[in-house]
Image (cartoon, rainbow, N blue to C red; front, side, top):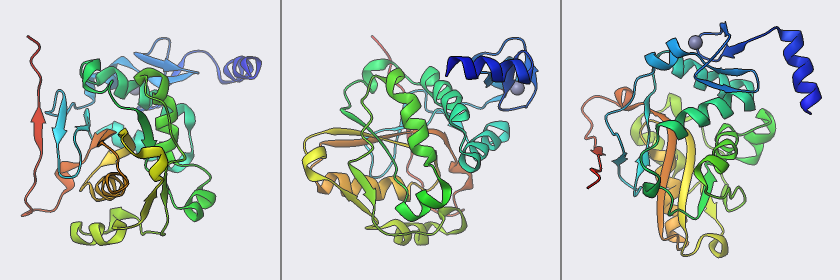
Amino acid sequence: MNFVRSLLRKLEGNGVKCILCGSRHAKCIISIDGVGICGECYNEIIKTQAQDYYVVPGLERLFAPFEYSGRLRNAILDMKFNSSSAYAAVLAQLVIDALPPYYLYSDYDMLVPVPLHPKRYSDRGFNQAELLARSMEAGLGIELADDVLFRTRETQHQMSLTRAMREINVGGAFYADRKSVEGKRVMLVDDIYTAGATLRACSEELRSKGAAAVSAIVIAENFAKQHAGEIRIKIPVIHKQS
Ligand SMILES: [Zn+2]
């Protein structure tokens, strides 16, 4: 494997390819297996107001360190449509570096990617949330559990739906294994948070099967995209260490 990687690198030329601007750099801020994020792009990524986490309906905590905009948005879309585990590893590292103090997420028992329906999984060949969770497992120190939550109903892409339709679309679409999640503190992983309907539906199912608490980590939040006139409940929480 290492041999293949080094051969690939020789063929591709020297340097690290930034997944945000596409340029090669001798050195990047984040660099994993020949891809990374360069200093210029890193400085342009917009951090969210929540230095620690958001309180949103249905979740104990929402860790969403970045805004879904600019080049970061494009990189997330690239990961989603190109099955790039290298991109996922870089984005996962970006998130881990930006998370609040360790004690705020260290007491979770399992890292659970938001599942795709098996049909969509086989069409696409991968689940971007699973790629992310797999890349985050070691850095977070929370064990990956990709066999405890399932999507039992095919749902439409949330992107095209209004907020109310999003709730209906994913409501009751998930199934959690009671034996695995009962009494456990669950950390969900997804790529972005928009209206939160998917994470909320996962959380409801997990808690109905006895999960003690459910939180989520996403790369970026897309609050700006939410429909005008709706009540938004998002409280950025900042812990002051005494
Ligand atoms: Zn760059």
